[in-house]
Image (cartoon, rainbow, N blue to C red; front, side):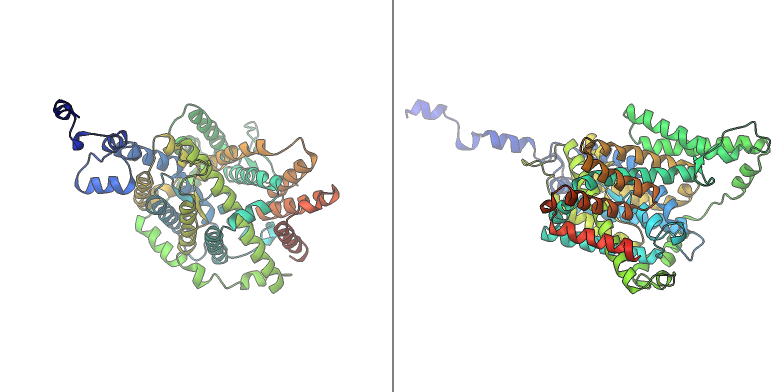
Length: 514
């Protein structure tokens, strides 16, 4: 090379490759603490920013904060020994959400949030803890927390050993597709009943009466139903228009409308509305922590292994208890597994957070966060903690890192001190969220093979038994047993795996012996 060419050539340190240029572009623009946070979560490297992550976190929180109110409404009916069961359930729910979401932030470093899952909470409150008189199992609240803890531990083992895939494949495809649909209808039914849209009749439930021409008609008797129906329509409209936090706004709007209509009825001399306003109280936020400390936290160890109330029920014994333990744990795990896997794939796909094989990145860490959070939630006194599908709203808003989840976790910490406000939300308003969840879960009905008679009947039986039999576990059991019978009768017995046989036999024994 000539001296002239040497002089014109750039110095080695001036030569910049494309990779170095890209790295320079993604170098953190912040300093000090914020630079360390940026590097830890990889905010700049992911192409995001603090502003985007904060907005995404707030969006996710607004979309899923309704769970604090809905879960508390459910659990206050089964938590014993306190005058503020709602407050105890509220704090337990918040702690489960905080633990799960912060694990997502720091362990998985993903922009997803967790809380007590819809469906699992219904299974605990309306199957495990419901009196046998109404078709439930008759277990205590503390007993149910043992099942939740078992669910977390089993899920942890399945995740660590890889057996999760084996269990997942052991459940017939028709049952897998039907479970979300059945749970959605089950939850929607509860919402309709809580709001008074459907009422007890003879011999069945019936639709609420809006017949104002009846002489003894009380407007307050139908206000809840009217508010819930309008609330669901409002959520649908806002969701269609892409309004962030549509469920929360629908719930809060329904609450406001509920009190306005009751105020009008009260002014017109309606006795029911007068009694409703007389029952309103305003508690100290710290009272909820006190109730939680005495009635929820640690109950899984203090009273969870005392099954005397279950064994005292006529016909129950040690053998039936063992079967209930196995099938209930299986049902919890299946509900949790399908919910979690489906949510992770759906939410991560929205933000292009999948690897080359189409699997969510850091999948095992997210599953680990889910199982650990479930154990923490059981100790705190709430149902299975799982990733919320509403996290998709934050991902769609641009959230790419665990900093989004951190923002959601901080919001839940603040919300812990707002239980008195949440407590005045009427059940008619929380019912709108329950019914809307049912609407969302019904989308899974398209995954059922209705053209194939064998798959169709398995799915149908799973759904109908869950809904009309008022039991998620029994619906799953009937579905699995029906699938085995169909395969036997159609000459496909070899397609039944050993794991499916074992699960089917366990459920069959439960139906026969309990």
